[in-house]
Every structure is written in C-alpha cells, then in structure tokens.
Length: 185
Image (tube, rainbow, N blue to C red; front, side):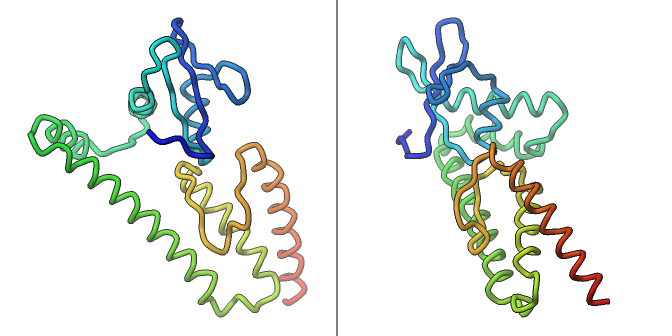
C-alpha cells in the first residue's frame, strides 16, 4: 500500500490495541471507520513485525457493521466474492470492484458538476445557500464514507471535526434563505 499525504498510520501493539500516531492516543475500530468516512486513508501496521494489517482490519469493520444488521453488501455479492476467491481467476474481481467504485465516484462528480454549471437557477439570489444545503445533504446521504467531493461544491477539504461548525453555518444560511423567500411572497 503506497503512502499518501492524507494517509494516517495506525500501529497495532502486541496487546492488539490500535495506536493513532497522529493524535498519540488509542483508537477503536469504530474510530477508524469514522476517519475513513471523513475521507482519510489509513494504514494499520503491526508494530513488532511491520506487517501491513490494513485489509484485515477493514474487513473486520465491514463484518462488524454486518453483524449489527447494517447491510454493507447484499448476500448475492458476498456469495460471489467467496466464490471468486475459490476460483483461479480471482485476481479479476478486485480490479473489477475498484473500477466499479471509480466509475461511481466519477458519475457522482459529473452529476454534481452538471447541477452547478448547467443549472439556470445559478443566477437566482440565494443559490449559493441552496448549494451548501445540497452539499450537506449529499454528505449525509453518503455518510461521508468515501471522501468523494463534488466539483464546484468543495472549495476546500473539510475534516470531520469541522462539520459541526459547518452545520451551524448551513442552518444560519437556511434561515436567511427562508426569510428572503417569505419576503418574495
């Protein structure tokens, strides 16, 4: 796994505790899942051996969500994954899944781009406020699980800790927009 600028190193100690090297504290699997939803890339390594354990822990996060009744993948897809690892051509499946997710991200970006550039409402007063609301809605719908961004809506990257401030700002903008709309009536 190649290290990126946004990648966070998590070390697993012999006690199986996970240590966030950025914040210098211990983290849980749910903490790691939250970081990933916020758009961070993580790498989990065994402190003693140096082995990369990232895949193992990401699969464990998915399994825990499934065990709580949160369907991550349909049963048919899970069956197909198991079958694919039992066949000689298994190397095609990971490449296919990666390409599928890339296409999904690209499609989402194109839709958001069309919403912002080809929208005749763009000249309407308060349109920027509606864009901010759309961005918040899409973030809520995707759970910020992907770190995907929508062109034209993301002027700068945001961290999960800043979303509370952004929510307050969006609420204020919504109130202003509602006030302006009530004046138009």
